[in-house]
Image 1 (cartoon, rainbow, N blue to C red):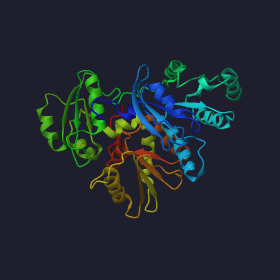
Image 2: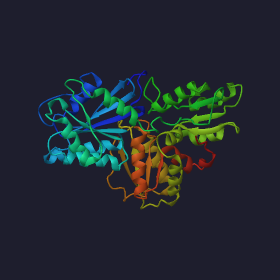
Image 3: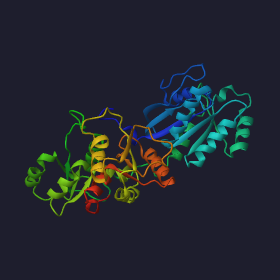
Image 4: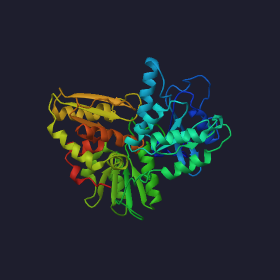
Amino acid sequence: MTLNETPSANRLHIGFYGKRNSGKSSLINAFTGQEVSIVSDVAGTTTDPVNKAMEIHGLGACVLIDTAGFDDIGELGKIRVEKTEKTAEKIDIAIVLFSGDDITLECRWYEFFKRKNIPVIPVVSKADLLVNGSAYALKIRGKIGTTPLQVSSLDGSGISELKEELIRLIPSDYDAPSITGRLCGENDLVLLVMPQDIQAPKGRLILPQVQTIRELLDKKCIVASCTTDKLVETLAALSRAPKLIITDSQVFDYVHKTKPEESMLTSFSVLFAAYKGDLPYYIEGAKALDNLKEDSRVLIAECCTHAPLSEDIGRVKIPRLLKKRVGEGLKIDIVSGTDFPDNLSDYDLIIQCGGCMFNRKYIMSRIDRARGENIPMTNYGVTIAHITGILDDIARP
C-alpha cells in the first residue's frame, strides 16, 4: 500500500460466489475492465479467496473477492469451501452466480447471505450462452423470490445494471463513523503522543496514527505530535493546553499522570474500538478482567501477522500485565491475522486488538460471535486503561 492508497480496511468489500467454472473470475475481469483474476476452463482454478483492491467509478474504493467454487469436492475442496464461507465475515455485498440446471447450491448460498443480513445480488452468468434466459430467470425467481440480473462477461451486457444494483445496495452504515467523533473540532489543539518503539515500521507511522492525523487535518484541528520522552517539553512549548491528547495505550499511565488537568485523554486503540467495533461492549467486557483466576483462559486476537517482536503489545506486554495481576498460571492463547477459534466456549475473556487492518464488518462478526456465546470481549486499549485504573478518565468518541 502506498501513501496515496485507501487502506483495504476502509474499502467496500464485494464477494463473488458460484460453482466452479460459473464465470466468477471472468465477471470480475469484465466488471473492472482489467485482467484481475485468472480465467481458465479448468474447474477449480481459483483455490483460495483472492482479494483485489480497485477504484470503481460510482462505488469508490473497493475490494473484490474472487472465491473458490462452492461445489468443490474432496478433502482439499472441503477446506476451500470453508475458506469461501469465512469470507462472509468481511464482505459488505455478495454476488451469487447461478449456472447450470441444478441451482440447489446457489439457492442455499443465496439464503445463507440473507440470513446473515448481507445484501446479495443473484446473477445469471454467461447469459449469452443461454437458449432461453427468461425461462431460466423465472426458475430462479420461483426459488428465491427475486429476479436475477442476466450478465454476460463476453459481450458486457448487464454489467452496468450490476454496477447500479451494487450502488443501490451499499449499506447505509457503510461510511464508517468519525475516528475522533465529537471529541474535537475546528481550531481545537490535539496532541498525539506516539512512541516510535520496535513495533513502528522504520521511517513510517503505523496505520491508526496516519488515519487519525488525516481526520484531524480534515477537521481543521491544530495538530501537534511528540514521542513519549518529549511529552513534558512539548507541553511546555505549547501556548495552551491541548483540548485532547491521543496516546499509544502502552504509555496510558504515564501520559495520564503528566497531562494538564483540563486536557481530555484517549488512545488510538480506544478510538479504533469505537471506529471498528463496539466500545460500550468492550468496556463492559473489561469487567471480566476483575474475575480472572489462575485457572482462567484468555484469548488475545491480533489482526496483524508480523513476526513476533521482543516487546510486542499483544504477545508480550498485555500477557505480562495479566499474569502480574492474576498469576503465572493464567492460560493465554494468541492468534493473529484471520485465525480465530471456531469454538470460543473455552475462554473466560477475549482481548481484541484495535483492528486497523480489517474492515468494521469483520471486527463486528467477531464481536457478534463472542456475544452469541456469552464470552466477554474487550480490546487492547480498554484492557490497559482498566488495569491501570484510569478507564473512567478516558474520553470516548
